[in-house]
Length: 156
Image (cartoon, rainbow, N blue to C red):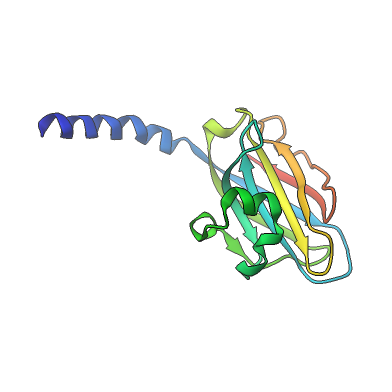
């Protein structure tokens, strides 16, 4: 039992500094002007192979529409635990969504990407509307989206 307690304390002591090494990252998404309903957005992380890792933010309150955020929906399996606490209202034409998230320092400059899937009712769904490497050099640099996103910026 003493060995178990000692091992647990050691693991905790080693893990605690890693948990403390996180930073607040501000994500700013500016939508293009378009005609139609507000957009649903999924902002998420993928690894170097493009495999889903973590949801950062979901814009849009009605989970029944999340299936239109294709790559994110497949990767997250639309499991509520993936988006509980990291979701908010959908975003209107020409509007800006600005959110802050906590990211571990180990994710930066390690091959991860931030991706955004977008969808608007009665319009085309856009997988990887934005796909940008998560790097120190990319911080503050705007990236143009492919469909509904005018620009996306992350600030470390």
